[in-house]
Length: 552
Image 1: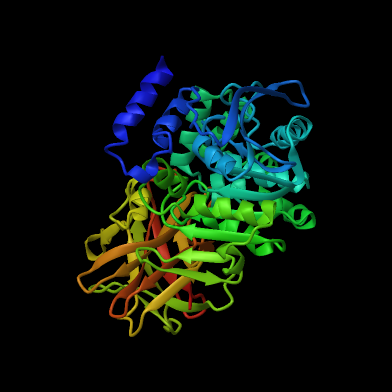
Image 2: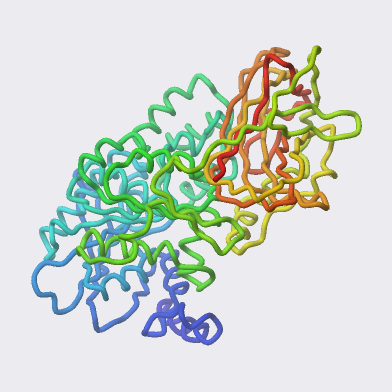
């Protein structure tokens, strides 16, 4: 009954939503997706394939994995196969539209719920060894029961499923190609990068895991320890995270010759792109990455479900499998493997690898603010016979912010920037430094970084840095940001902190100014303390604070 209601609703909505979002049978992908959230499979129908929603695969330890399959009709001989693995909180019905598309292109497509999710048994292993073994069991099942080409097996997924795909390919050479969308390189960095708990996403993951799945209690414990800055527990968490981090298995991926496609959004504050790009730079086999605007999984979901925006990542996923599982040729074969969409522009730049050889770091030195002016970003070092400091207080956040978590980054995908009135921000709770008016456009491509000389007057501190493009009216458009936390600082001790901002591609127009703004809180991250401590920024000839910006 529920399936019939959803199908009728789909037919009604097909007259409202863009026509290109509907399947040939009139089924809207968003309706199929919504039904999947209720663990109901509403399958696209086609004469090109046959589906089976009653598949159960037995894992090595005896638990059952729920799965479904699309098999092209009229197969002559062996066919390539793609395995889809669910995102966190979803199940085997997540990719029905994509499975239909690939089946119509001649692929056998199996989707399964990883352990602890949907109709599968067991406890959520959080991309651990059990999940890796399960993927190999799924391959065994496919080869034993369907006419699958053993040289033409690929794996794909968004978020959670992408990480399992990468880890599985590192451990099982039968996986010849991977599409890892909204994936991660280092899971420790995702949860606790630069000793900073990713509050919003960490809460979403644990709450959803407890409500929808069968979450391993160790995940709740680890997240509680991270939030509490329980430093004694961090080594065990790092060890737990290491075996779940694809960046630690680059050698295996290279040895297997796995063809790796990656799709990533700049504003993905769950799995920020930095460590994924570090991994990409170490891959020696076939590789390709698309960097686009948006937040976690939205570049994949919005276009495919409701027809909003460019469906680039899914289209390239199909092309990647055609290249490496079918041996066909297409335009991806001739493009540079690193593709960076420039934020808020209809422009994509291609590069040979990462780090980008043609991008060089431009170093700006921070000069202190005065009584009536802001701090400066200069190309020459600060020089003074006497040291100087500027002080801010940490009692609250400021206008400098990533703003509304998830939503603000999603709006960037729709070319709606995050703005701040630079001069209106609190002088007592923040500080900013700006260049002069630029004589020519600055084409930022890569990962900016900062090195700061600070003096915290408390045993904890947090520093959030924002890079802005400021127009002549003083309005700043957020380019990128970064954060570092000192959970165990020495009161009153001068210290140097170095950290990266999030990788980006952005053009600062001529006539605008580049601004580095700093405060001590942001809604994306858990604040290290509610105490209103003072934080000094130290300036001297011997110890310089710098901003480095990679630009073409």
